[in-house]
Length: 151
Image (cartoon, rainbow, N blue to C red; front, side):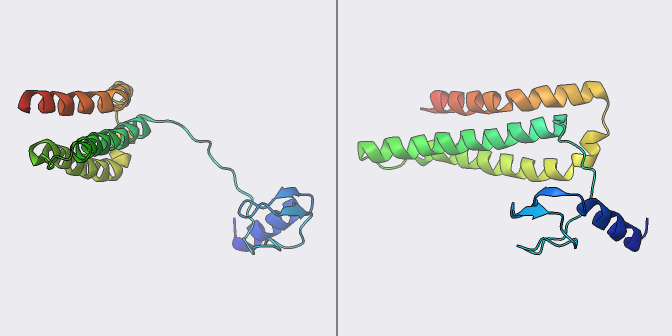
């Protein structure tokens, strides 16, 4: 479809449209151009694919939540030592920082592997999705037991 046809189809749709602008929420009432009169946003008629939770999303969630676990644990170590008036024990904090960097690198790599992850078999996707859901629990246990065994 050419640009002129798309523009003509958009204008014919907008001639009967009443609703909010997708960007600013301005109430559009049969607009005569394909620009929002309030914010200037170019209005397009499109069909959007609804969000679909995939194994890639679940594993990304697991990585991000694991990053949160590292931040939480490091924060607790800092807060406990500061509250007690004791010096910070770097033997407790350095493993947290190491895992933080490791997981941050994992997020970058996983982001780049999106296409690859979507082409896997259904069984592999199921395994990756399940692993993503339990990943924060696994990281918490690794960090917790490292702390227990080294203190």
